[in-house]
Image 1 (spheres, rainbow, N blue to C red):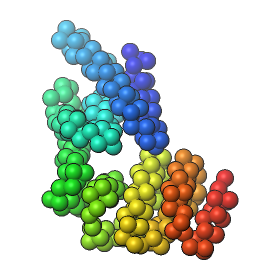
Image 2 (cartoon, one colour; image 1 turned 120 degrees about the horizontal axis):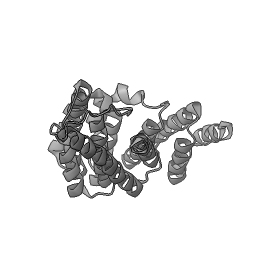
Image 3 (tube, rainbow, N blue to C red; image 1 turned 45 degrees about the vertical axis):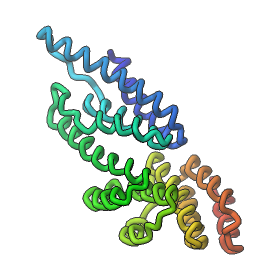
Image 4 (cartoon, helix red, strand yellow; image 1 turned 90 degrees about the vertical axis):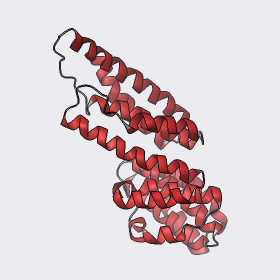
Length: 264
């Protein structure tokens, strides 16, 4: 059992690494493995409880219910990235109500509530990806109530707008100050979100004839990855530049070269 307990946190970390590399299929595989391990431990606990045997404390970083929710959340997000929206909805439903979980303490109940709230937002994101205008409004309301979800939320807005060729300038203006503060994250997972944001933001503004604004934000992002030393995010950002290098002015080309040459 000790090995299984360790595997939960190891698998969680492996999933986060796969996310930074845009490894959607790998995320699905690891999420399924995480669920199997967590469920086996849960079933063992319930069997011990039924026999009247005291359940020893298990040394996880998070309550056991967290890993159930996280496995479903990650699989749902990966399915969304693969445009398998109906399947993604099935997994959103799975983590929207984890109240059935036996043995929840205060910390576990907080995890249940967290996933219930995230599920609300992610149901809306399916509508955004499908181009449902009312879903865009719903997502904006969700972001006002949950500012900690702003980076992935704005990313979803941009993905939907780019895919369906919609104008969301008024929404971006609404969060202009917060968007200007994106970047410089220490956590690779947040930087992975930021790289995706930069990609979609660049495409959106170039399509609207605002290449200079797009490249300025991209340069700021590249510089932020340089400051925090995130090599994966830095090189992923360079890949974006390679697609849009024709839009760089001479001054921006020089700035780009200086940032790349200074990166250690």
